Image (cartoon, rainbow, N blue to C red; front, side, top):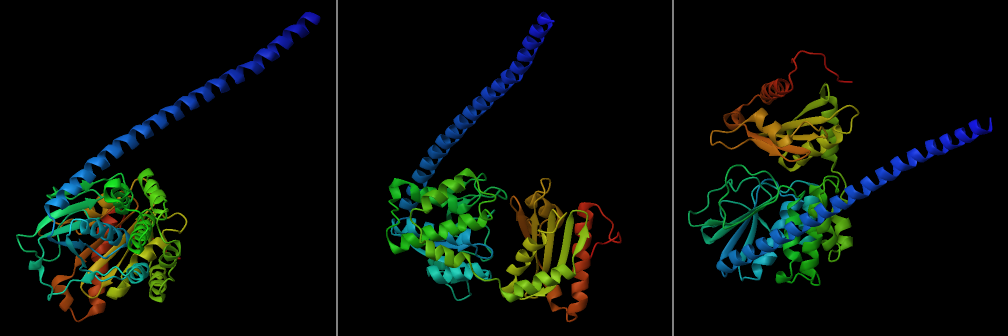
Length: 405
């Protein structure tokens, strides 16, 4: 019996020791993986720093070659914080080379936060009109856009000097200075790295520099959906910017109240929602140009519904074009590819829309249909056409059972 008890005791000790051995091996393996990950991150940082150093040198060389010239910084699409902030940063850098800059936009500033940003920071940009003398510009620059194509014609002598973006480009971009980084969540993060470089001596001590840092931080925050989709580069940029920004100003431009019209559009979208599995589609009808951002904000709200992974919300804006927004949390829906496959290209080969990781948009001109006097009939036609394209894309029948509760 004594021998059996001694044997059992050794067996139990041996049994208890085995899990400790496995745990130790797992812990060692985990430490090894963490070490490897840290090494990879350090390598990535070193590679990125080297790349930034090279790009800063290229940018300095480009601007030095354009010293004393006139530069048009064009904001494509509806002005948003990321694009506005990038324009501000480029204007500040260009001034060091005695380059006269003009920040111009074609579309109206419609989003309430963007209007607050422009007003509070006193950006001083102008809206395009036929009275502007475009021949006065030697060069132009484009930020935060998939292509350098502009909605207006520039003189042939006006060349693309700077193109900085963080999206997938559409075709080849020919620019004197070119910097495209798809692994960044915001364009503002790229410009933050430029300013961080000692060659530009951005101290954040002047009132102008504080406003630029504040605008860039707002750009990083908004384009990464409050850092939900931020990358390590965006976090690094925010760490740098946080040392120089005006926190009271940032809070002011980030906490604007939601316009009543946006809430009205959200209610309309809820009433007209069309649920197809994990997809939700909604057409909100006619929307004023100044309220068009409400389409995207409504889509953001609709995406919060349980069981919904992708939302497409659209309307007819300013009686001139169909404007739509896509929002998704699906791992299988690529907004950029999805929208381009659904709506295709115009006669010039330009896509009607595109997107990034979790959101996208499209804009289709109504053309001759703007002359239709029966607005109700036109909306029925537009809605039927858009819905058929969406149904075909996800593979469902138009007359299948709806969920409109």
